[in-house]
Length: 257
Length: 236
Ligand SMILES: [Zn+2]
Image 1: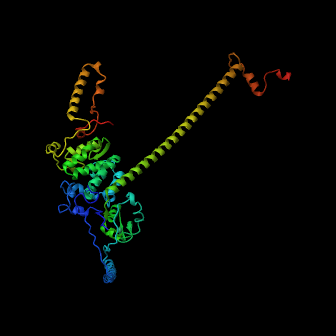
Image 2: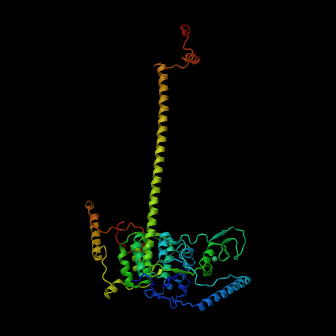
């Protein structure tokens, strides 16, 4: 008989191990200090964490996401309450799920439950080496499902691919400072990564088409009668009417609704 | 990629040792148990005298801890809590106003304190749990996703059914209301028609004559009294 493998039900030992010889995440960071101290304290003091994250294992995480997560975010409201999303991410830091389990969260579970995928990509960004972050997250940039996000400034709309893009390009997401990954082109130069082929095609071509579209539109404005088929020929639609956060608009790709 | 073991590289070695018993050891164990029980009674007594809680030390018979209301163990937490009516007493020891834990004989004034207690090693020990949670494998995670997805689909199907039912009821009610309105409209039309007919009848009674104020008053009165005119009575 082999001994059953277990986790501690609470986080005490996990947090006690910070700074000492606790096991490190695959990217070399101490999982107990990946989130900032003030945020960790808010999490372990929160009712949601105490009630819903105690004695939870890797399978129970899915229950909690399905039942309790309907927005992403770090802390919100006047008292900077940690979101269930962030609490569960903290729990994952403690549970240290294997790669096989993360695949389940990302693919099989992620197809069904978009917030499970969002949680998994966030966790992978926090704990995995940069090469792995790119290779596991980039294929999911085709996921255009909507996500709600709660922050200090209220609720806003985002998308799974935009969230992943944030994780790949921003310094801080969901009240957590993201460790500095090497840029993609550096990893390409080191031949650690193959150049990425966007599902939309070559980005240069897209930009050229965009330029052409603008020119044609100018022409159309000049010769008012000459409208018609121009718009339908262009693959990129103007997004200026979208009232999203300014930082979300960066690098936003065209997507079908 | 392994299903088991921590991704952080914690050793997942087999720490079980094969235990060998012989009769001497068995007897020694029994003696030890007797001794332990005696000590426990003593410790309990001392704790009580000192006004402290007594926690039974771990003895290896404890069960693993499981998450609240997780899909696989819905019944686990049922019957473990009891709400005591306010005014039954004050203070943390013993039964009092608030949330009472019968295992630890303690009362807590609010649900946050209660929750802290439920999660505490002392409480877990009192209910015979180790505070250790079994790790899930990737296959178990997969199965859980499937289960939850099925449950969500079932919920959606039920919602569709209730939505359909609600639409059906709504349609029926609208139909009824329309019918009601149609009836009222018809009644109104009927009444108007009758009034018009009445009007028409009066006009035919008097023919094309223009009534002169007071001219037929006498006739009208006679008619009202049952006579149709002088002289007619004679004919009868
Ligand atoms: Zn208790």
